Image (cartoon, rainbow, N blue to C red; front, side, top):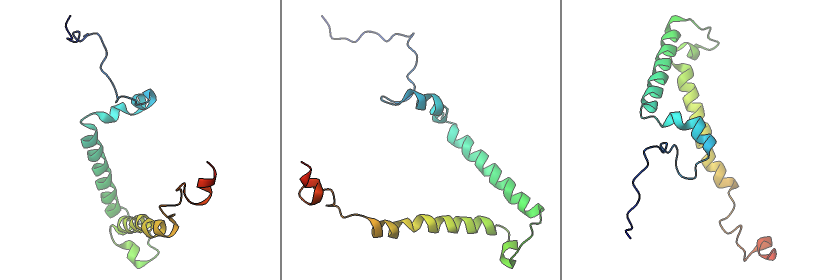
Length: 114
């Protein structure tokens, strides 16, 4: 008797997804695993961004403040505002974080349950 594995069956379908991955996620998102997905997605995003910047120069928006008439103002403003919103999570998490010993079994109600 040999311990050699049987030859692979050529009729078995290729495995989609990773072991333990839900079949629905494989069905919905397997197209994103293509090697050209990232390159194509970034090309489309860059083209849309270039188109929007080009349209900003062609169309004359009505500005309510003088700074709004600068090209790219809304993009820079949105980037800075989003960056502040993300970075404000760091001090907020320090303020609201519970101590690391909060759920220890030795202290508090967690120890009385057992």
